[in-house]
Image 1 (cartoon, one colour):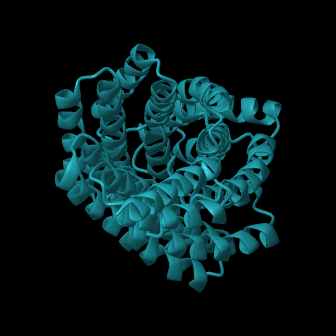
Image 2 (cartoon, helix red, strand yellow; image 1 turned 180 degrees about the vertical axis):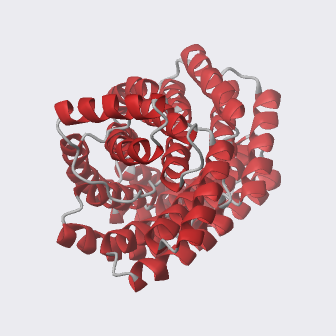
Length: 448
């Protein structure tokens, strides 16, 4: 699943192409003529329009040109945003720190709050969730103090994003549902799409795929309406994950494949890696392990180049699954263990539970149960119902293998209850296995 998405400050309506072209030429002449004031004003207008439509490379180039005339808070802010969006978080941190200092010195509370939001976003992309929460929480009262309803809604969305990444999806949903009516009331369509996307993401992680698809299907046309290519790719990815959860892997592959060229076109290296990883994962589930390994290996290289630790862990987990499919269990175990260490290091509880489940699958008997029970504690703590059903199913399998039918039946009863709540596509198969175990237990009791 694509990460829940961060919300950026609302941007003015994109100007007509002719107007943008005129501003670009004015900016070029102003830079050449060392007219700093004109360059900063026109550069800010164009960068805002370009950032909204995911023209990150162009925005970075223009902001850099503006900065040749001396320090400027807006140019640092815009360049930091562009660098963050194209997978270079540490450079983005430096730009945003410069912008924050300048906005603070100038008494620009709006600029200060927007930059705090962006620094929080960069921390999120680095997996520094507690740091991200600190910056977002610092920004929220400033938005309220200045009556900035757009900033308030965006920051509520971002706080929800962090809670979701920390695994507390119910808490995340609270913040997203606070943000949505504000976005709609003020007519912030781009922000509304982000929040709809994130609510859909949470429902997906909770295993409620129909609800997830409903919210994501609302988000996608808004993304296209406002020209948010990066957001469009993210929502396409999330819809793909929902179809994967529903068991329609070919349909999932269609959506992931639509997202990949968009990520490449806008220069989003982290998004490109995620798309490659998702395609690889589908091929893994389809049993085409060579294709899976090819896509996942491309993705892993990118995440390591850009320092995306959370993405790296997810991809390593997938490569481990491919190795298991190819029959190399020892190599698979090594990859799963690497993923476990990274997820614990960055505090990614959902990723940690996935790694623990995968490691459990490489063992038998009591060793497997130990890992599954660790995973179960995590998924229950973060209310991941889909993850809980998967983990309990794994536990039931081990008990069945060792002949403990009572415990296996108890676990499968939990699985069926969880999957019945969301009309899971594997519900019918789980019910059939449960009935089989009950009959087997009854026969054993009669024979004794």
